[in-house]
Length: 386
Image (tube, rainbow, N blue to C red; front, side, top):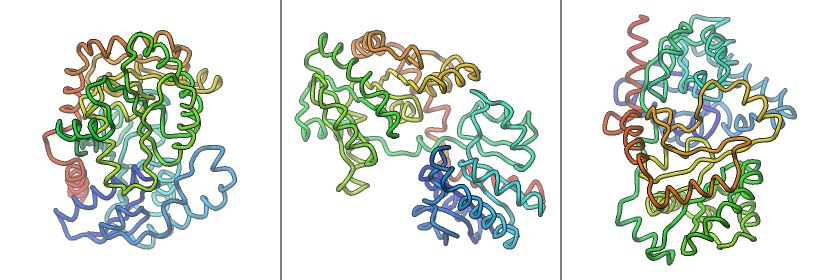
């Protein structure tokens, strides 16, 4: 079987590698495509460096538009020349779906897209546009298949990769506390995002929240795991915080060791104050109660506020079908109410633990690995269309 697989960023590389490993368990496979180091370790010879596709924001893409269009055309031509049994595109829709459109216009190659667009939250029309070039969708969330099927695509829920991530043990959490001199103090994870814009916008608000929390809980110890691209920005932003946080810096640390340290920090925390996003699922996997807060610039706030179709953006709330995780989004992202919620969660997380457990179960914890489930779904679709 010949598979052409495309990923455009690190998260897609991770999904792609697990899918490739699953396919190799089930069939004799030859891979071509575009991917990062993890997919290359599974046997992919990338057509060009995946990093070229990882700048897809409007401000970043404009200067590189012509080059990216060349890469889109090059990739589509390579797919058509290879005539694979299936083209699998992974997330990165701005690149992936343009390639798929060109491939479909020139061939009848089966197309599979891994990671459904969030049409349940906003911009529902994306599903109909996608259905013109995609035959089959592999979804990360159990509530997504009906949206994709209604648009005319096959869709399988294959589980979320968070359920396959290793979680730190109680012993590792205790060792982290001892190594960092945290003792038995209450630990608050502070997670202001992994993008520079997010950190710049949220760090001052989170600092004001911490000031209020410390007034009530002077023994609190904040811990901030960072990504290397924002570590210096975080250090500068927390310089005037009322308590100096422990900032975890991945730079100069072995990636496997840093991943272990970050997982231990998540497990050691009593609660978390976090930006909106998939981090809420990582916290749920570690059974860490949370408060979610997020803000954006005024224009984005107006546009997204009008387009949003759900009453919560927190994935734990959506998957568990509860509203147990407090969230403060847009104009609600104010230090006073956020601090009250953090103090309440520290004192009593209430129903959050049950909601987090339900979330993990519904995302596939305890079942087959998502990569293997995705591989089986790809093969099932090929067999049905044969």
